[in-house]
Length: 135
Image 1: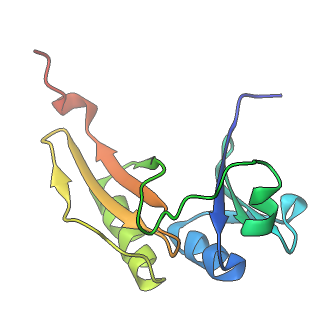
Image 2: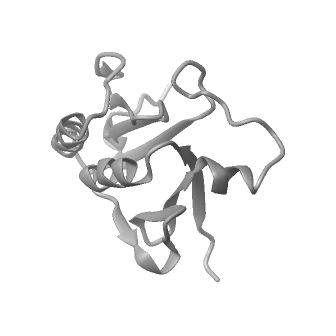
């Protein structure tokens, strides 16, 4: 089996969250989805598992963090252009996401941030490798 990453997120409203991630460009894999979990595919090796609270709790003994008020992780997605970043952000904002701060421009990288309904934070960025400082 190829190396893959599965990011598991606890969400309050599974259908609403699935619609939000679909708007960002993820697709649903019904093979690994049911009424407690939705497998959302970003690429051949990157998946986000949206799990309702009961399902998520079955994998841990820890209390689920309130990601609306506390940060539990920053997840980043790279895209091929700043236009793609802006398009993804527009779709995500129209689907109900929140942009908590303004775009950041580091010269070689432009980055925007979007939060889903549960406060899970995604950094969406484009990096121009030819502009990375060499010193």
